[in-house]
Length: 128
Image 1 (tube, one colour):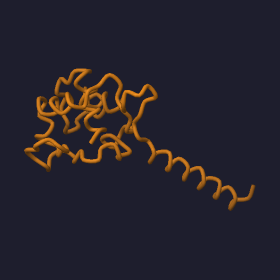
Image 2 (cartoon, rainbow, N blue to C red):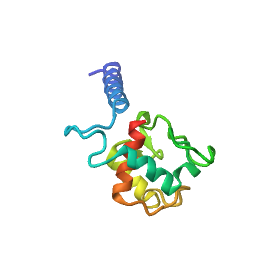
Image 3 (cartoon, rainbow, N blue to C red):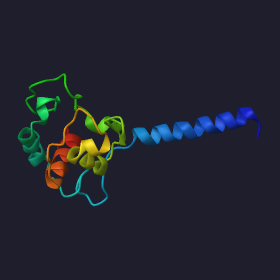
Image 4 (cartoon, helix red, strand yellow):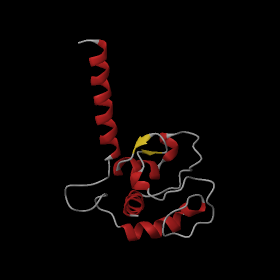
């Protein structure tokens, strides 16, 4: 294979990977929505309870500040969580529960979010 053909093959593979990454939308095969065993309405309440909107703009939730943390509008269209993790429900749940374990020193503090609350918050974010 000559260099030009090899470059074309590499570009084709890179394009396929990029398209696959863009079509990462969370989903399950059990019909339960993007996050199994979750309730987006409870997620909205948990977002308020944990004060997420103190740092983030969250669609449908009154925000106090829009400048500390990233805007979470269109979260399901993002490729990465915190620039570190692939945007998949299980990774988002991990991040919400314990961001300091994933990125030590990140501005997002560990808030003591329970497993169920993390599932519900993730479901809410993917549902917006």
